[in-house]
Length: 276
Image (cartoon, rainbow, N blue to C red; front, top):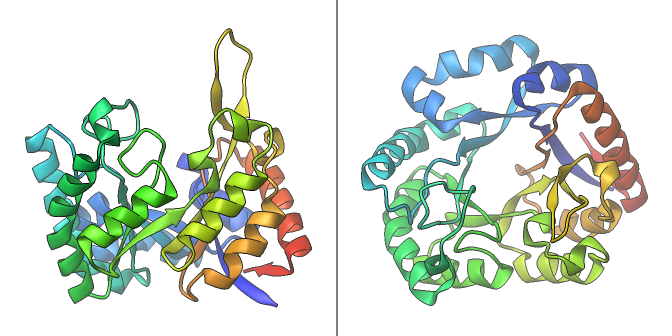
């Protein structure tokens, strides 16, 4: 039976929820790691017997036109990379590239052109070399609004950078459009098969439709969507490295954490996967 490491992100509740729900992994911030150092960053986790499941550098946006802000984010990333192995986690997560400085907030038409991948690759190549030197994985967070808005766009970026130190988070819902809100099976199969061998971390979140004249899709608890998480786990488990993590994220409350974790664990049981 395949065993997967389980992590959780629940905002300000993360550490308490992880302890209460028996989840071992929690994320840390690259900025805090670079600014406060290893011991200060890990102290709250060590006190609770928790482990690092990912290092978030979501502010690093390789296509941002705010060059001053981007230079600062790059400095944070370059300081965090040599420290990452000492945290016990080699996965640092970044934005997939957005000409809009918001990163994940808004979009820019230039994101979807081939030239965007060329520009992102030029920016990421030296970062990937530094990561490879330290045994660290730079993990792109895919999202419809960014330059990495499809599985194929990540494969193209990976080829342009030419480094195994660059991988992709697998997050099936990050590629959902209107059609997938009704039936996501085809999209899940395509995403998992296309990115197999190229991801380290797997993120779990759910999207739900809201009433409105046009399309309104937002975050919600796992119970609020139609994703077959047993199918997802069955597909991804054979391709996850032993040191990678399955991370339930964007959890709003401790109550939602308990409900969503119960659903995720039930899905794991159906998939023949042990979450530890």
